[in-house]
Image (cartoon, rainbow, N blue to C red):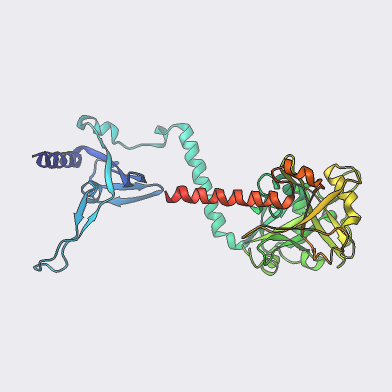
Length: 396
């Protein structure tokens, strides 16, 4: 009896919405999640439309109304006449809300809408959205004519290391990006940089980034004067084989005593560009403090006073040096012998040296992470744990 009453209610509701119903909100999925969309009859005709996010499609009345009751449905038999067990499948689309319009009010509600009937702030928003859509469409259509150039600077390294990132040097998705026509020469692009950053062309030196076999990403070499006469499109194709959708660069700018840009120093094969991070075990803080050119035949002990100045230490402060080698799949950060040459330590352009105050053995126990390797290991494990948590939540 209860089943009969329920069935009659469904039939009555279906018949009623056929005549007076104008919208069906549908939930597709289970009790733990899913997706909402709507079937709407926006006019007095029998034409229904399905509104599913940005997709709007025509639907017939049967699809809009009769197939939204959930439950199970039997597929028609492929071999009629045979005693086959009908195949049933669960329907995951259920009508969640029905919208009716009073018969006497339908002519007032379902009527033509002119632009003047739309609130001004909505008209402005729709106009802006349409302009943005057309702009993106145009950019996509013209993408083959342009090269995206991402320029990282010391300010980016200082602003990101220890906050957004800890390993490597920079997140390229957060640096200044330029959309440049492919045929423009790089020397012309440098004039754009001069306007943007206030660095005269003659004081700019750009380095190409390279992905290493250990999956780190470091500045590899400066552009040559000949390369700077080429088009940016040619440079992208020739020099950036891993990320060929864009050209990534590091802008080296040297400052004089008055903190104004000066010409970069001549670079020979003996010169190595190193980047330095300072670690404070008391604050558990890692930050970028600068970069230096060193001679491959020189020794770290010769630059200790410069590093102390970068960190704000006394010139004769004892410090320990470590090379940040890689962090995937595990962290590798090795001590650097201060008394052997940079070449003997296999340091090269773009390498990262982390340093900190030397701690007495008895005082290391007062810090959770007393040295650079233990801190980087902690950061790496924290990041892995965060990813696993997100994965677990997604699966659950």
